[in-house]
Length: 109
Image 1 (cartoon, one colour):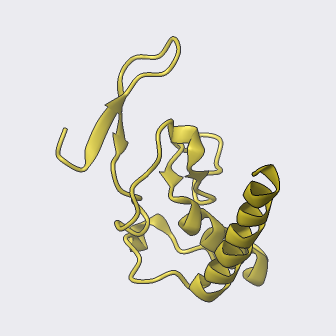
Image 2 (tube, helix red, strand yellow):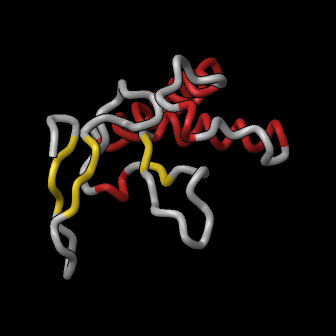
């Protein structure tokens, strides 16, 4: 195990190594537990090992798939990516989410 991975234990499972940084962008730390991240759309095959990516990369993959009818996902051999194709859209969605969350918190105070 190198410094880019951490060990995690799930219920009834042996220890497994989970990347510290998103394997797609190599910039965003992955969350624990692992399921708080996005399951990459590049790992949908029956025999594929599941690979988790950060939520912004998961959103980027979703938009890539939507805009190309499923044919335009950045393949894992091209990871890490230099930039997210849909970063502008992701930024707008994040701002909207932040506004909604702030409004909900203000209602509770």
